Amino acid sequence: MNRQNSNSTISRRGFLAGSAVLLGAQAMASESGTGDAREGSAREPWPAVDGPFVLAPLPYSEDALDPHISAKTMSFHYGKHHKTYVEKLNKAVEGKKLAEMKLEDLIVETAKDPAMAPVFNNAAQAWNHTFYWQSMKPKGGGEPSGKLADRLKADLGGMEGFKKAFAEAANGQFGSGWAWLVVEDGKLKVTKTANADTPIAKGGKPLLVADVWEHAYYLDYQNKRADYVTAFLEHLVNWDFAAANLG
Ligand code: FE
Image (cartoon, rainbow, N blue to C red; front, side, top):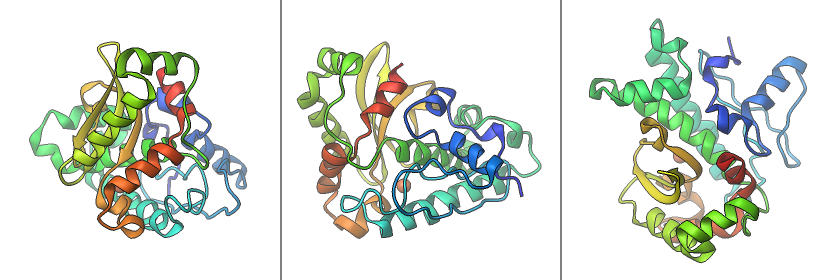
């Protein structure tokens, strides 16, 4: 079993960014056998996955985002959904050159070929989820400061404009998908993608993401996606992560 492979890193930018350096945490844990950089009281072991691509540990315990996202949701979302994407990806690339690529490069490569959609979907979902866990933190929300605050003001009309645009993108995404804060053509922009699609497939630079697949919120909010999106914006957003991604 290989739980640590440098090919499986999320973007270098994302890898280095923020307080929750997922694969760094995993590397530490793997090397020491005991290390665990996650926040929170409980320290659940993260599920192991066989293959070149790893399921990175959560940057906090499964109950750390409660009551906004319950431990039950996290347990299913991370321990079942995210884990399955990584497992299916590993199965799909078995014995292929793709198994030796960095995850981000594999996403860009497979996005170009409709015949590779099954590999792309699992690869993009694996990456998107790792980015999503880092986009949140216990006692998150509030407002960014410094450069990111200035950019939000200049490009999106400040926090009010950002929240409105982000909520519209998240709530307006028909069916499954993701709402993003990205840098595009040198400006901050709110965008949305359907299903597994991800801005990095076309060389985009995401700062934050909210998962708006039903599995992200249905156990806690049932059909009320807007309430989950409000909780994400008010209580969960990890602005330190977004600021680090902005650079
Ligand atoms: Fe999800």
